[in-house]
Image (cartoon, rainbow, N blue to C red; front, top):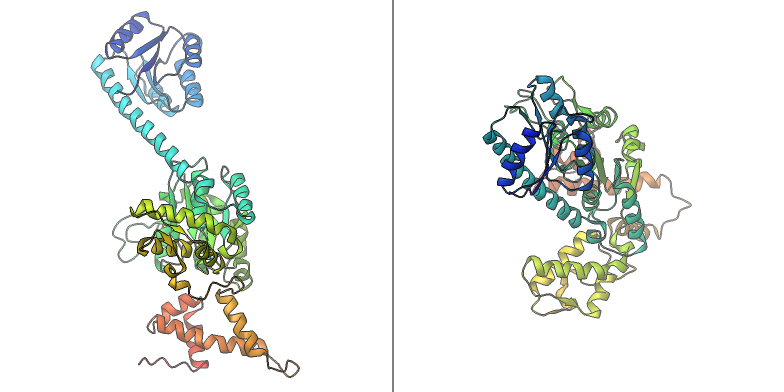
Length: 476
């Protein structure tokens, strides 16, 4: 047994004597109190693994002691004793947090069974406590959100302020900047540590299944619903739900999410009864939600509900000073995870890595370093170990999609007479739409439903554009 020290409080001397002898025989150190006040004084002076309290004692009652013990030491187990085996006593004791309840006169074998169960519970509690410490250490802000640049320092300050609270957070930033890592850091540095952290990608799940994933469903709610199933909100109760790619959530589900944020309750698909939930929401997107609000593709009221505390993660090209620190971290991680030799980078290599624009951000850097660490035959990594970067390592050359389009537009418009131009906006959009829709249709093998989802437009709108833009759907 891991329990060592016990407190016994009872105003009957015979009960104290029997318990002290029986518990001492099992190797416990036992302190005895003959009333509530004496038990409280012992509790305040010493540390106990378990207390056995009589409900009725002179002065402070056992139930009042239980309440105080639970408030000051919620990890300590308490077993209540009473000569009155009434339902009221049992219910009240368990409601106040008692671990178990035993009536007098009791059999010592019954007490031994309770102590054995309590010892096992204490072991589990210790293991959970250790796991919590490990998780908290794993997701400490200064260990996993790597970087000392000014943009990241601002992120750290904000996280330190909001993590201990229950405020709703909206994380924005390009793909690969570490939005889920930030969400996990918020959860694991909050009072919800030890409760579930669940993540759901709103863009990766078909809209007809997303509602069931979030809110659950009742048996027979739709074809294939053969049994009741709780959704992510119920599964995350008491913890944190991370809604990634929130900008891709269908409008009809946005209304339901808004209701959850307002009412703190959900209704399963096919159900009628509301279910209370206590879930902290952290959402993330790589889209401009304000623009989607203006375009009527995202609810304004939901946006303001989510955007209580916005956190914008900087792209890697805006914090190039952090690249050497990140590279060193990823090299050490690769060596540990894959039992590979610990590599290092030459000065020329580090210059190449710092000059590249990293359109895939930290995720792309991690994959690139990991690949080089595994494949390079040498301990010192050289530019030859990064052939995929090629000649893209120009610090002034931004290879993001927006930058590429901007460069192309500048070239195309350079020789145009702006004095003679009219309706340039429509003309450019028309020229961009056709190749974009063609590429998406090719990628989806002509599946117009999926293509419309990817483009974020209605299927009927896509059909009209295919016709208007004269896009040939025939495949070679």
